[in-house]
Image (tube, rainbow, N blue to C red):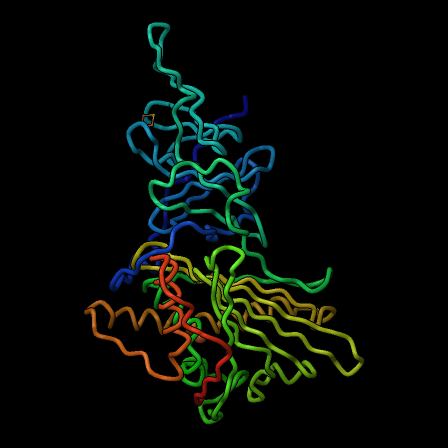
Length: 381
Ligand code: FES
Ligand SMILES: [Fe+2]
């Protein structure tokens, strides 16, 4: 048997914990959420994560399979992460119960004798479906009391970053936000904060603010009963006041928001030589707890594929961009702690209104799509 390795239970005090949360948001269970970057998890490694208020132990077995266990021993509730993992089984630190981590099935209870009738394999730790995609461990978080998920076939599709070719570069970013997931999401789709939060010489200045008209259309997801419904900002040429876009040729951008937390952006451009170039990103805002969330961005592109250092440079500017949002939300969280009343105005906050209506529809199973058909919104940004 491989050596049992102690797992690290030490969770650094995060920014989110330090900042403290404002008011909680209702969380949408029954969908896939990125728990952490899985690409760094080697065989035999484990890591801890918090997802929708559930502590998770995520790891990779010696055969490469990922697992995600609720980080609590079903015996007496000690975190499994303080125990040991040998690449095959997770062993609890307290009384040494041993679990196969993909199924959660208990394989051994060391205290049992021939006088006992308890069958360990009838006991399960709570294991969640987990799929590795775009470098993330995507974990399916069922509603409380929904029971064990036996197979993946009945589950909604795992989100994926769209790619439009075989050769591309990619980068990812993550930032913890000390506000609830609703504020994280409406911040993400907010069209009016750009000129104020994202001022930078390389992007745009506040003086470049001008009137915009954007077309939106509903996304119904009728295939899955509307579970991942949302809306699309229809194909348009991106703001001409954003310098990096000028490099691309004639780009066409589409931005989709779909429940519960996903924003897909694609930019496709035909350059002077008639070759298609593309950029795609998937941004998710995931509830860590009811009062805090985390933003994850994964992007891929084949624009400037051959130019060296594009990935670190893109990551650098992307990180600056996300850090500006994060800084703003840390400041906002200070205000939200006194639970102020809030406003959503037309038209700039219309996408936020749609989000709340769609989320409510998903949570209650009642109501109509807030968008009856294509509409135009106007704002200055
Ligand atoms: S608490 Fe885990 S084995 Fe007893
Ligand atoms: Fe932003």
